[in-house]
Amino acid sequence: MNQASTYNKEAFLQVLHDRRSIRRYDENVKISKEEMTEILTAATKAPSSVNLQPWRFVVIESPEAKAKLAPLAWFNQRQVETSSAVIAVFGDLQNLDYLEEIYDKAVELGMMPQDVKEQQVTSIRSLLSGISEQGNRESVLIDSGLVSMQIMLTAKAYGYDTNPIGGFEKDKIAEVFELDKNRYAPVMLLSIGKALDNGHQSYRLPVEQITEWK
Figure 1 (spheres, helix red, strand yellow):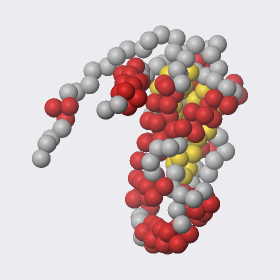
Figure 2: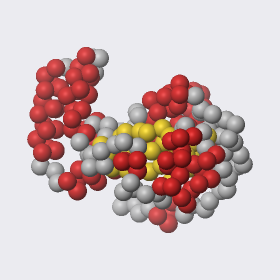
Figure 3: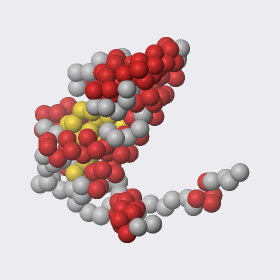
Figure 4: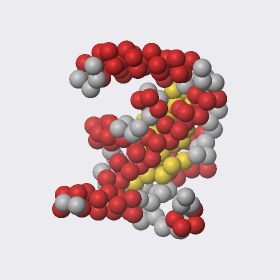
């Protein structure tokens, strides 16, 4: 392994080691729209089923938006109030609408030839036309979970801290932020900002206990 690869591995492992779930942030630190866009752009390199990228984000940062969120995340008031922002992650259950756009752009950028694009689009439509509503929802939630973790790791690489929040009013949040609740499935909230303290380490089960080798 060359020196650059060793450095990259060590730097990435340090990001994993240093990540903490933070519940109190420095209210004086605000992440700019430009930097937040960079973080989200990097995070969306996450994989997704047939590259349909079903994740959708609402960045809740203004006092007015946080006031709307607060009653929906009542058990996590500190994170909502003190974070620079809370990213609401949704899964688009109608993500097939973006199939042509995604694959046309791949052809335009030289990532695949036209004939391959046409073959793949036909195959994907055939595949997904037979999937159940529950199967589609499960796939979308898995993909959206992948991008959520990637947001958290990317934020840490940028020097910020995060906390995933699953306890909120999932049946209300889409409508509160003017999204179609039948199309956009809430996945989680991610508070993000600069930690006011170091947080707490938590115990992880050893790999030997949770892994089987066949």
